[in-house]
Length: 134
Image 1 (cartoon, helix red, strand yellow):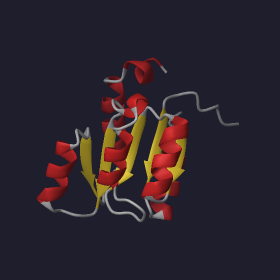
Image 2 (cartoon, one colour):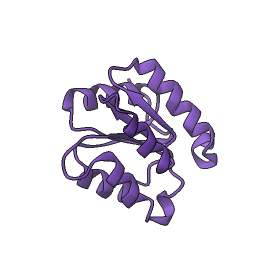
Image 3 (tube, one colour):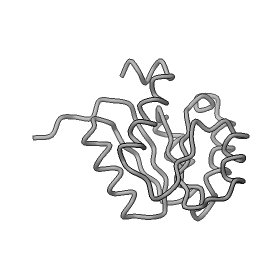
C-alpha cells in the first residue's frame, strides 16, 4: 500500500514520455506530489493551476521551450519565487547562461543520475519556506 503524496508539489515538463514517467514514479515514491506536462503550453497551464513548489523544465520541448515557460511563469505573482531546475541534453554554454539570466536554481545535463536530480530538488526546496514545511 503506497502512502499518500503529501509532500511538496513538483511540476515536471518534458516531451520525452519515458523520462517523464520514470521521474514521476521516482518522485512519487519519495513522497512528492507530481504534476506532468509534455509541452510548454501545458506546463504553463498546469503550473498556473497546481501552484507547484518546484518546477523541472526540459529546455527543448514543443509549444514553448523551457526558457519561454519560465519567463511566462515569472509574470504570475504566486509563481515568481518558484525554483526552476532545467534538464537539457545540450552541452552549449548558452543554456547555462540563459538559465542563470532567468534565475534558475540549476541546470542538469542529460544523461543524469536520478540521485543527483533528487539532491538538487531537496536543496532547492530547502530554500522555499512553504515547501520545506510540507
